[in-house]
Length: 104
Ligand code: FES
Image 1: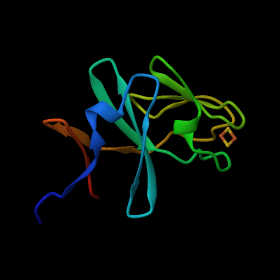
Image 2 (image 1 turned 90 degrees about the horizontal axis):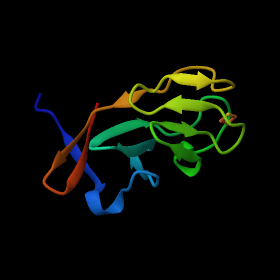
Image 3 (image 1 turned 120 degrees about the vertical axis):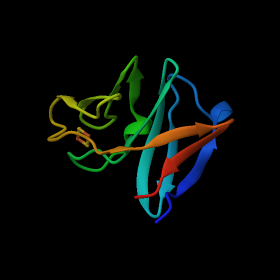
């Protein structure tokens, strides 16, 4: 089956400290820009319910707005509890100005 990629926004919508929220078939995804790289991560904090994109981005980490768990954006790794586990990552790419997420 051919790969399917969906448009999640445009590069102009994204900056280093303001990630993009995107819903892929009901799944919340956060898209982050760290330097020149783009990363797409599961956006609901595994601890309880909070959208990580509404938290605090500091370089290559994001802090949950609710109980301050910290996750590493390039790997999804939980760096500070109470995150509970690492975040799932999604494939993301640029097609011109368009940010695309791979449908799994
Ligand atoms: S909901 Fe994220 S740390 Fe509790």
